[in-house]
Structures are given as C-alpha cells and as structure tokens.
Length: 301
Image (cartoon, rainbow, N blue to C red; front, side):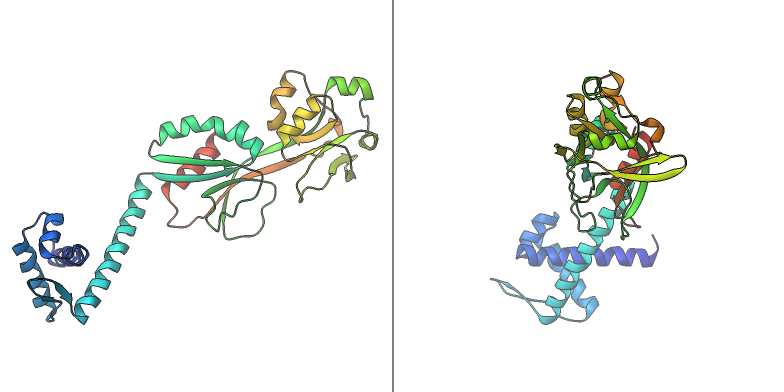
C-alpha cells in the first residue's frame, strides 16, 4: 500500500474512532465497541489533535466536551462515513444482487405470466426479496412507488428507462354457446347488434379497431358488462354473456380447450400491444433491478 492510500485509510479509521467516542459518550465505551483499551483510544485522539493542530475534546473525570473544532470534525466524520457506507453498499449491490425488489404488474398479466416465473427467479437470486403488487392502477415508479413496473401499450414521455419485454396480440372472442344463441358476426358492423364486453378503465374507450381491404377503421361497441382486466372479460365471455376483445395471454386456456372461439379474424388489423418494463435507470441502478428486467425479457412468454 503506497503512502497516499495508507494515509487515507488512517484518516478513515480516525474519523470512525472519533465518531464512536462521541456516539458512545466516553473513551471506555468507544473502546469496548472497537475492541480497544481506553488508553489506546486516548492516544489515538491525541494523534488526531496533534495532526490537526487543534483541540477537539475537553476532557474531565466526568464528561467529554466538544470544542467548536471538535463539533465540526464530528459532523464531517458522520457525513463522510455515511457517504462511504452508501458508496460501498451501491458497489456491493452492483456485484451481488440483493435487497427488496418492488414489482408492479397488471392483474391478469401478472397472475398468468409474471407470477409463474418467480420460482425460477428466486432460485437464481435467493438474496433478493421480491415484493410484487398486482394492480391495474398505474403506480408512480419515478416517485419510488415501485422499482419495476410492467406496462402495456404506448408509454408517455418520462425520465424512466423502458425495456421492451414483448407484445401481446388482441383477439375478439365469444363462446360457442353465445354464438349458437345469437349468431356469429360476419362483419364488424354486426357487433352493433351484440352484447360487447369492455374494460372499465377511464383511459379505455369502447372502440375496437378493424381492417377491411387495406383501410383501418374503428367501431364504438356497447354492452351491459365491464371489468378491469382481460382475464375477467374472458371468463364472462366463456360463460356466454357476450363478446370480448382481450389479449391472447388472458384467454389462452379458454381458446385451447374450446370454451372461447376467435371471431372476425379476417378483419383483425394486427391488433397488438407492446409490453415494457419501466424503471429508473442510470449508473446507480441496483443490480436487483437489472437482473430482474433481464430475466423478464428472456423468460416472459
């Protein structure tokens, strides 16, 4: 170790020792905390005062009193030691992912697609505590309400970093029972005579997009049932209560076992929604955030 590095290490130890004396209230108590004898602590303070050329402590048999210079040194010591701890924690976190990871995901997509992956993730990173909240409300990642949020659709401009995880196709579905009772729509306009199930989001309008002969157009549809997630809309459609337009991930099982049937596919305009992970990026991004986003990008179905 060269002289400059040794001098820095000695000053860091001196700061820690002086802070311990003030926080514990005496040389003997600081010595016990640092595994040093009271006389060794006293000699260390003498060396600090000699190096600085000022008196830091006024000592008596009953109490230790900080001088003005001692108060300034103590405040600097606490600030420097705190900064050092923070820096070391950030560096350690970069190297070994650990700590609480707060994840926000949409209700249906989280339950069907994200949660089933967590057993593999926690096996890979046992020192990360995954705190997942499934909600269709938009949490404020920039304000610290979550570390990572899985978002659907276009993203607003913001200071957040976004990583594309994939996309989901939208499909219009109905149950065979519903189609037997009310007839299968042959054209998009036929939907105006059917009970169409919609999302109840304030930001979601009951407008369904279509494509005919290269021309894009939309229809406003109506119905007597609404829900806040595609999984519930798919269930309602499977019960024969109407026609729904949902992400394929939310009705994959119902499509596979025949409880739901895709309709009007020749008019589907390539109706997809992008899926992103959004998070606070930058040089100080915790390793737990980085590895989780990379895991989702590699494994999300």
